[in-house]
Image (cartoon, rainbow, N blue to C red):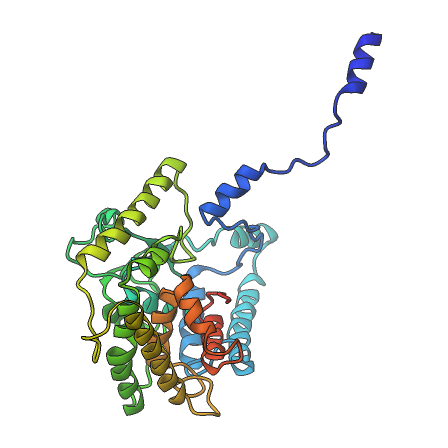
Length: 367
């Protein structure tokens, strides 16, 4: 008995709380898994009522920037009406019926999946527009060289990304299988699930032409070099909403695919030669492209009138979303961050605009 007491005194006391090992935290960091507490709040209204309110909100909030006082007032007004209507419906019910009504709706009557690839700027632009309008969508990142998600979802081999699949039993959320940015956004606008992000003005058309001629080709040319391309692929997930649930072996094979794609596209993709670059090579070519990028950004910023927050005025238009998609696609790389910080700090007009676009599209990036 004495030996047992003595041995127990020599034992190391156990902590009241158990902390995860450092290796576990490292693997979660490597796999880009976000640790967040699940919400215990439940909606006490059905999916169809919620979707009707969302469509009404899209109509009345058109032209308003998320986060502004007018936007919040319209949102509170519509969802306040939704709550009041729900209270009226529950007035004549018993306590047991009301409890059943609270627990049953879980928004399982529809599932929206957007299949994207990091090599397509249209995927980023489409996702930003959907998140700007608070469209409920899940994101899945596919491998452009081994499109297993596209195959599993029943799309054709030649279908272009992004791909939208809606599986629904709700009348307010129709089933569909859509491809390409134009088809997805046009259809969702036609059924009033999102608003129109375009202003359809001549100013916007001129801006889109400028982006397609001056901004996109320059950024694409910069990241055709091996080092920036390597920086682009060395990230666990390009789309932050995609949750990684792979086993370590599958995860490592996915990283091997990233290494392969960096060398594959560097070798197979044709080199881009911009205007007045035929006699430039090496560092002089790189500096010339960096300078061209800064000039293109200066031109874009000059198109934002001093009293406006966006190219489209008080709300973003198609030009804002397209420029933001090009920058955000490569934003995680050291090359792109160096180009942005070289503009003179976070008070630069381009960085202020980028931070504003980042907030309204709910990406929460930071330099």
